[in-house]
Image (cartoon, rainbow, N blue to C red):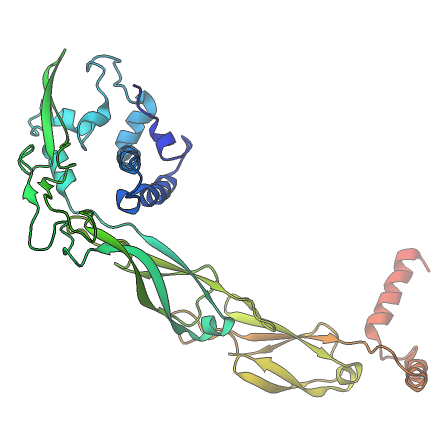
Amino acid sequence: MAKKDYYESLKLNHDATEEDIKKSYRNLAKQYHPDLNPEDPKAEAKFKEINEAYEILSNPERKAQYDRFGHQDPSQGGFGGFDFGGFGQGGVGDIFDMFFGGGVGGSAARNRNAPLRGADLRYNLDITFEEAAYGCKREIEVNRTENCSECDGTGAKRGTQPKTCTACGGKGEVSYSQNTAFGRFVNVRACDACKGEGKITAEPCERCRGKKKVRKIRKISVTIPPGIDNGQAITLRGEGEPGERGGPGGDLYVYITVKPHKLFERKGYDIHCDVPITFVQAALGADIEVPTLEGRIRYQMPEGTQPGTVFRIKNRGIQHLRDTARGDQFVRVNLEVPKHLNAKQKEILQQFDEMTSGKDHHEQSKSFINKMKDAFGM
């Protein structure tokens, strides 16, 4: 039966980048991990399939070899139709070990029994605008696998210990020979009896059913630094999935989503807001009230302020990450035109318009009229 395409196993296109390969592998490994799918008999086979695919595609040299020749060797039969992925974990490297005295299966054994780092986890956390500006502490609940406390991660019933596999002598692998045109080769594969572990658990732990790990919801305290922005992440080292065979735990990435504010908009470390003013305030100037992150302050607006003018208030913005410096606050004033005027109010405004018409009170209007005259030859 023909082996499945490695790219298809990882649900990737053949132009996938190194980051694409790593990301897809992590997602699929978590989805099909046997510990997370104890009721699915196909999960273990699928997990092995994606691990084999990742082992090849994550290695630049072996990926290049696979992209050129697929599962077959370049000579199409020179190695007896050998599948390069069949040499344990070493692949093509095992063949060179055999030719040049590297030892049969040595690299495969080391890789199979080596400590394995745990998978990374992601958590999405929503915080308020103020929490992002000033920082805060939040407690989150993370659903992850942990070593079973009943058996201390051995998988064996309390009071017992896993025994060395007699089929492989504790190596976790068995070898078999095959005659080819180049001579007799020894191939290495995982031991079927112990599933490559090197040990067999005669009496499984009742809590984890011999899986060594259980799922738990763990409460973790997260410190949000002042100045963090939407979409940024906090890395908690070792708080991801636990490692295998003494390997380090993965990391937990807490991605931040900052809720919008009713008044403020953030741009970098500066904040912006709009403040409505009346015609009289704009014309005569006024001591207006301006909202800031620390509360309301008074700001003296000069007379003749035009609609849309932006005032800058220094050091009223967001604190920089890992720094005590702060951004500024920019306040844009918007002229609010009154509605539903009574007759008396309309009369006063008409009188005001007559008094200022043709005078030097409306510089923008005069400039606009002059531009129209030049444009249309008026």
